[in-house]
Length: 323
Ligand code: GDP
Image (cartoon, rainbow, N blue to C red; front, side, top):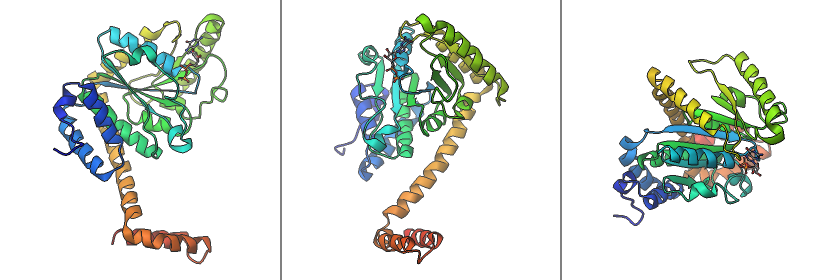
């Protein structure tokens, strides 16, 4: 066995060390690691899919980690095994992190039946989403039956997360319109549920008003399919309304399951993912081709000097990349 080989049986047996190593392998950029990781993923693939995949987004400060801590502990108490993965749009760009810098979900992280993995650093957003999908499969193979994928409601990451989960939950603050919430247009359309957090103390009334506002807004949107997105309130800090969020997800799962809607949504997601991967693989193949590496600087210079059109240069690069 190669040094980096991981026994698929150890993952299927739920060994945390093996799972953590497998995710590290999946996150690696080295070609030999990529290959070992794909072999491992193929070996565990028959053991994946037995989870409910829940995406959770919201602006910094809305209470994502507080919510996930309370929600995760609630799920553990009900006998579930919970994995928390993060897609952090800030880590590849700034080197900093919106998720995972501070000590987050301290109680949850100490539980045997919880597994928390921060966002992989140092790769493009598409790459982060790809690695998170692979990590999700590994967690499922290891027997985690609820996968929470957390992301910050800025940029494109929430679209990527919505495209890899069964149920997408948007956390919001009491009060304020979409702009004040920092919520980009389109996020509400992605939501299967909006949960107004911090519905406690002096904010309780405002949370109820906000709930009605979004319930009204959602009822005006045309939703394809059977599920009408719901709006609830909770206090992650006081552990109120957390159980109702889980009941709602269970209800979704029952209704969707009866219609085969989760399987068909996952099938569509896999197809979309495959198409995205084709683009990325082709791009990588062209970019890494020796002939392209050799010619690139000169062609870029020609484009800069406007002696060659961008299309002509791009065509030449793609041609070289296929040689
Ligand atoms: P994140 O950036 O979205 O992960 O937010 P955090 O979970 O770190 O929470 C940001 C701040 O809001 C912290 O000071 C929390 O204690 C506080 N907070 C989170 N949930 C609640 C809640 O339900 N009620 C109140 N009053 N504060 C909360």
